Image 1 (cartoon, helix red, strand yellow):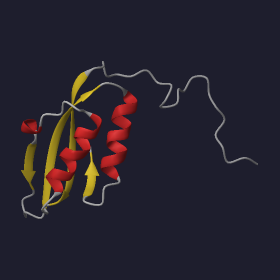
Image 2 (cartoon, helix red, strand yellow):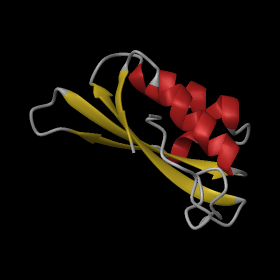
Image 3 (cartoon, helix red, strand yellow):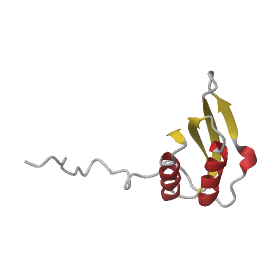
Image 4 (cartoon, one colour):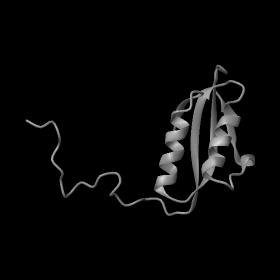
Length: 101
């Protein structure tokens, strides 16, 4: 017996579902990690790889109550779902990053 769920014509896969985002648009991404030297630079470097016009002056920083973690909100010019998926994937796999929202 197969463990796969049969494909339903009524349920679209993530790649087939219509986007709720109208491209291009300014898209905020919140990234959290330990408050260590180089975290903000690493995040802005990744943002610049996927958005050549990324404006680092728009970065918002928020430290956790205990001061151990840092929330970094970047706003990228999103041009496609594929671009956003790659940004999320790249940020999520960076060793300094704990969470990407």
